[in-house]
Image (cartoon, rainbow, N blue to C red; front, side, top):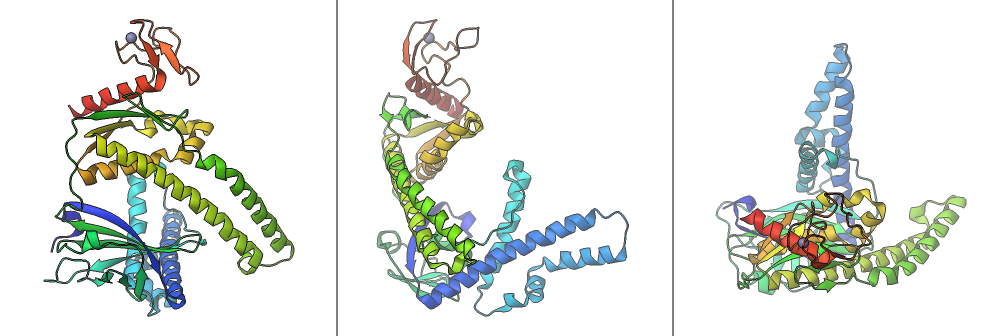
Length: 417
Ligand SMILES: [Zn+2]
């Protein structure tokens, strides 16, 4: 059977699950272990780093180095830490935590700004990863794996945790396919106490039908005045939900910190402070609502773009250098541009469309009619306040963001040519 990476199509699903209180305990145990393994590996590597800087070749030091290096081995790690031998721990949880630690290092080696792996703090959210496994000659479908598998359309099985009821309908996706395998599976609990299973699915058959060719191409300019302006001059305003709910959130957060203070004064631990915990849930629920509304908005806009165009071009945000400006950085995270570009990329590959990003250099300053660049030869450079301008060379009247979107499309086409 092919491995996940060898399959042509991949698809992610996130399923709400309803564990029993006993199953909740098992999920907590496994997510605690995932975090502990990850943190142990960091601690070992930090100690190794320090020991390797000791100049004298002391026996004590070299012995300790050997011991630590050995401990990083999977079996030795489990043997060393007694509590990892609990029979309720899914062995794949530990293997995945180790792999994630390695991935974090690889990421650091590739992109240094990613930073070295950091200790995972104990929080109210829980998360661990496990897998579905397929034996030789087993069918490649979501019911035939060991480890994680679907039992029927309403239940899944997780290793050590057992049978769990799920919500949502996956019949359309799963019923008629003999060609899907499950890859990595993430079990999680959100801060507002909801449980989920996210699955990577792989197949050689497309998960969705490709969209019909539209012969339409579009550039989009993401900016702060509105959410985006496209190369046809359409403007999509920023969603209002954030502003409406912000006051409510601030009020709830103030109440939370008052309760935190009171518990502290009375010398109670926050985990046992009932009123604090109640309010924490209120805050988490408001935050989750903001996230949900934002995601709905991003999905609606991205679906429309992918449905109606064969090619979508946007600027890459890193090049836009916006994060240096605090106010702009704030609004980027508010409206979720980064997530938006990720969604576009994902949907484009899912539906057989093309999505590219281009370097934002001069997209705002250049006249899309004659190519004249503002600010280059002592002419006034356009600022964020200049929403409309006239090209001093060809006298064409421009709306700033519309002009930028046109340039972005041209750059995208050039990149693909
Ligand atoms: Zn011009």
